[in-house]
Image 1 (tube, rainbow over the protein chains, first blue to last red):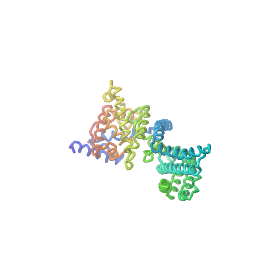
Image 2: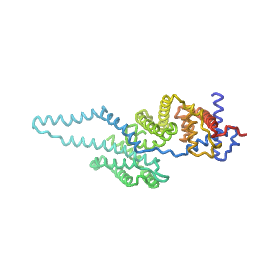
Image 3: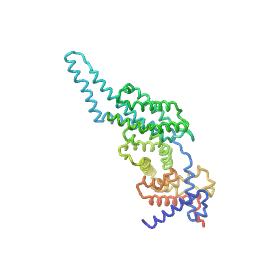
Length: 234
Length: 182
């Protein structure tokens, strides 16, 4: 290390220890660092000014608008999904074409349809659980403040509503024995979603802490991860 | 971020909402323009989204985010400097406004902002970024070292040099005293 840099580091450390003393550190005590101490205090005063981002919601909407088309393009172009879609179509259409040739009426094999529906529901459950993980983590690490003791839940509430709607798409499958373990978790999640949806956009931080305590006590986040893995492998 | 890196847009939206204020504040401090700060902050989040697959799961997200933010700010500053090549930012500081009062204790916050903004503009890109991260955003020396991918000692030395430059510039404006107190 260069000699000069070593001195600069020492001076910086001295300045930091003077700052740690707070208002007690006098210019006299600072000696030749008095000017630097003044500058850092000025910087800190300048930093204490509250700079709020204007039009926060519009900002977020515009960013999301910019990234959404990219996702859609990728989704349609994802080769795995394209192959899977082609296979499902082939499975559905080929037997029907054979039957149609003999009877003249197109009939869809109900078993095949039920299987396709079941695959769809499984995917919807996995997507739902992924959203649940995002939501629960976001609630646990809340930091968007409306005021000193109120938390901004705009996005969390929006996500909770989307999830409640999504849940309706696969609720019929929940009675199946293979989802026995998941059933309890889904019921717990639904209660949390309804609770969250019922909270104000600017809600008391205490209410959120209470909800977090419930989530943590029942190990819901770990269960979400475990059940998602089980369903994925099923 | 892990969820966002797997194309989960809900997770990404939450991530934007969590960090947008801090990022905007940092950009605003660096560029001193509300409009530019808004645009650059958007660019930062779009860059984060586009680079999501390169995010390493165990890496600290804020370090990664602020590295991207810092690069975007530097790009914008260079672009602005090219536009304003008739009058450099350094020249702005060499013709300082004079403060009526001799000590910073009596200065209004608005006045501090004006003088400090000019003095910060005269620092090098690296010095200015480190000062903003340390004194405005409250990052530790270790965190800044991670963002800049350098040693903690380098951060300390750069920060001290930056503070000394600020002192000299502000002393010329009469905001701080350059006298040595013994």
